[in-house]
Amino acid sequence: MIKDITLGQFFPGNTVVHKLDPRMKIILTIAYIVSIFLAKNMWSFIAVVASALLLVIVSKISFKTILKSMKPLIFVLAFTTFFNLFWTTGDVLLISFWKINIYLEGVVFSVMMILRITSLLVGTTVLLTYTTSPIMLTDALERLLSPLRLIKLPVHEFSMMMTIALRFIPTLVEETDKIMSAQKARGADFESGSLMRRAKALIPILIPLFISAFRRADDLATAMECRCYRGGDGRTRMTKLKLALRDFGAIILMAAFITGIVFLNLTPCPISM
Image 1 (cartoon, rainbow, N blue to C red):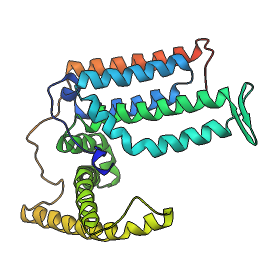
Image 2: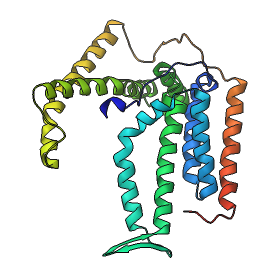
Image 3: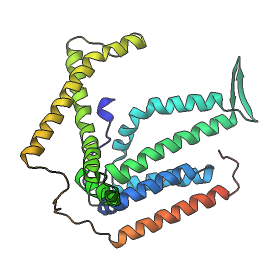
Image 4: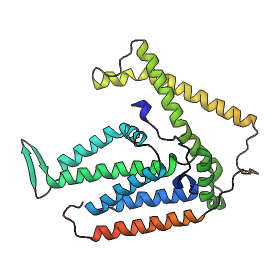
């Protein structure tokens, strides 16, 4: 499952989603998250799921990659489903066993929560991290936060830290997989035994992982100093960010999508949250 974590990876491409201005992508991602949480009934959830699938198709990110990225969320989805299924009450009782009561409203709420979390992950990763390089993401974040410089906030340094953290997620995942493979070759067992025993078995992984992370951070700091890095003062950019017609078209489509979600919520529907 460690290898299935794809957060922070960039998949180069020549699609419309890849060509969007990274500043617009950040704005669109925030708007998309808002639209997902605005969905309240079956029709609006169908629109949300369809939009996530459309993003995957347009960006030409393989469905295999998307499914792999979902594997680490299996526990979260199962946990959410369990609590919503057994703790949500309603009027239509489906199953009653001992002290366990499962209502139709609980089933509906669980399914909609799964769709919400899945669409949230798929839409945001495809729209932002999978189709935007870390360098472009840094520039976009710095540009959007540039007004905060008026109150003396270190915008460039904050953007750089965020991007470096995102960039090193795949590296740390790969390092964790290597350490686990090495420990398994020495006879370590991470999958059997009680929960406490499995937690203790992770200690031989965490210690070398932290050491490796600090070593990489020190090497990165040394490399930046050798290149005379001094923050954003006097920094020039090879690529200038410019908004194109497709960016304005994308924001218009997103505004229309959010408006459509609101209207779908007002439409009579037998299934709603």
